[in-house]
Length: 114
Image 1 (cartoon, rainbow, N blue to C red):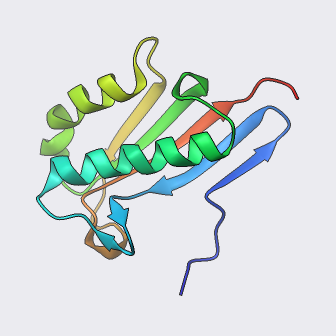
Image 2 (cartoon, one colour):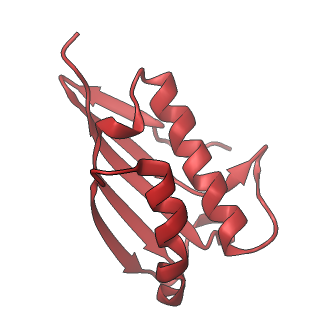
């Protein structure tokens, strides 16, 4: 059963993207933290595209990690995905994430007026 949420919601120019984990075809990708992170970023990119937004529209990101020691490994793929100027970011360690995920990322974006 799908959880009761929307992948993204728009209110005026503000767009909130729900947290995304490294799932593909209903299951987490294998291979550890980095493959999972790359899938998280791909999932976020897909939702941004579907909303008519780009990575440059993202202004704030919240990152949830089950192991804060993974934070340094997050930085390079994250930087390559978003590019400069980077969104504001908060990263926190959590006890667990849905489906056994190691990383979850949610984002806020600002859309150009329609």
